[in-house]
Length: 93
Image (cartoon, rainbow, N blue to C red; front, side, top):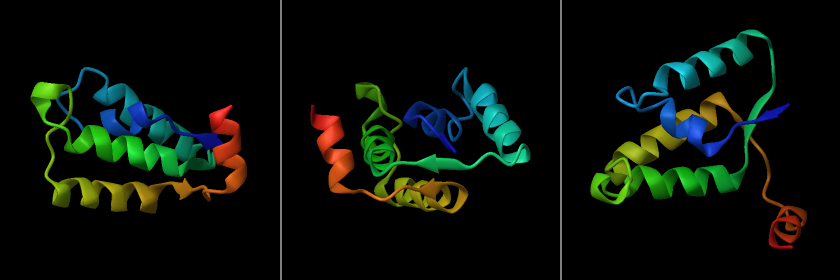
């Protein structure tokens, strides 16, 4: 199982970004190779924060509707790992 980084999620929906093609290609190669692709709840939170932040503040400037649609697509494409107390404990220490 491979945990996708939030930057891969962001770059794969932003065709104008210089790393768009690399991000899309990496995801396609992994998917064709039958790799289990997953995201953690934290990836979704980080994605939302950057996707809805104004472009002038280093965000993508998506509307909340656009960002919600992208999150739905992410959740359809990736396995979303559960958010458990163990994850929170490991991340805080």
